[in-house]
Each structure stands twice: as structure tokens, then as C-alpha cells.
Length: 267
Image 1: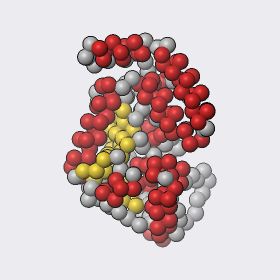
Image 2: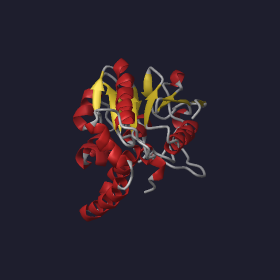
Image 3: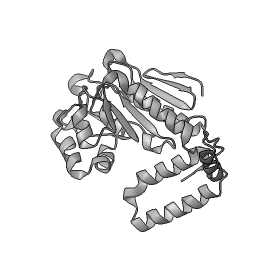
Image 4: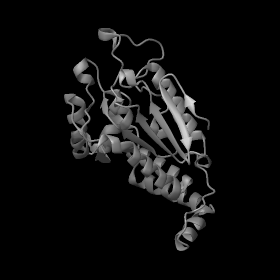
């Protein structure tokens, strides 16, 4: 995949890692409709490219994403228009068949944080400000936050975040269960990249795709349905040469050479 320089973001791929950088630093990467469309396209490209093994989403310093662009001032949230969706993106991170790691290297407010909630991991800056503040602006949390956040931290803690609109730092994000890891801002992106590299080097693409898709659908299925889905997926994975390669590489103490592709797994 060649590098992409959009109006609001950059997409670079190397060594199996796709790095998506929200790139409006003069507006602290504030979210616009154009950014939503470009991010959707970037996620689709990463999903379809079997050369991509993991995705990192970050923001051009000094912020991750300051939320919706408030340039229209009091008209920011007035009117919806044809085709309006509160989702922000029409191809969210959880649909990508590779792990998506949010390197939240600075402030993430409103949709800035709810976009990160769609990711599989969140490495977050300890001294930045976070919050789903929309109820304090006369609207409500967006980007599937009422679906993703309770799955991540439970209904009671999700209510604390969504219904108060209060802001918090990285340590509180860790306490709530939103942050996977918390560290100084300048360490966030390197740590996220290192995690992505470990996945790209060690994890079988088909296995990761199957496990991710099952995880994100688990709340819609009964224990029996999950058990049945695990069995069917195991049958497909165990019939693939990667099941032998993984064991062989482990016994030989070397990196595995996977031949399976995430795009082979349609769920």
C-alpha cells in the first residue's frame, strides 16, 4: 500500500504496520466530516491489504483529537442533513480484521475519545485530558460509544463517563478500564508501535482475525453460540498449514512464517 496524504490524515505502511496519523495539528486534530470519510477509507484499505498485520491510530502532536471542530461555534451541532450518521466513521476500527491500537498521545475529547474506544487497545498519555463531554454541549456521546464503552468497562462505569460528561486524566482512564496502558506522552507512540510489531511478528493473521471478530460479537451471542462459533473457527484454522507452522516454529525457537491471510477469513 503506498503512503496516503489526505486533507486530514496520513497513512504510512512499513514492516506490516499501518500508521494512521490524524493530521490537523493547527486545530488539535479536531474532527470533521472529511476526517471521518478519510479515516473510514484508511480503515478499509488496512482491512483489505494482507500486507498490513496491525494498525496504529495516533494524532499529530500536541493532541490525539480535540473532538468535533467547533469552528461553526453555536451552529456546530445544529441540523443533521441528508445521510447524517452519529457514527462519525462508516467503517469503524472493530471491523478491521487486524488489531487496531490507539496511540492516544494527547488530549482526546468527545469524538476524539469515542474513536479510540472503537480500537482494540488504547495506549494513553498519563497527563492528557479525556472525556466524552457531549452531554455538556447539549448533545450526547457518539461513534457507537453507547455500544463500545459498556463492553469495555461495564454499564456503571460507562454511565459515569457518558452521563456526567466529566473529564479525567490517563491514570483515571486506567482505573476506569479505558486505557490498556498509561505512560508519558512521548512514550505512547513508540509503545503502541512495539505492541503492533509483536503482533505482526508472532501472531497468525487468520487466527487474529477470527479471535477479534468473535470478541467484538460476543455480547450479541449466548455462551452456546460462542462455543459453536469457536468450534467452527477452530476447524477452519486447524485445517490450515499455519496450525502446523505455529507449533513447529515454537519448537524450533524461531519466528513463524505464516501463509494464512486475514482476507481469507470472512465472518
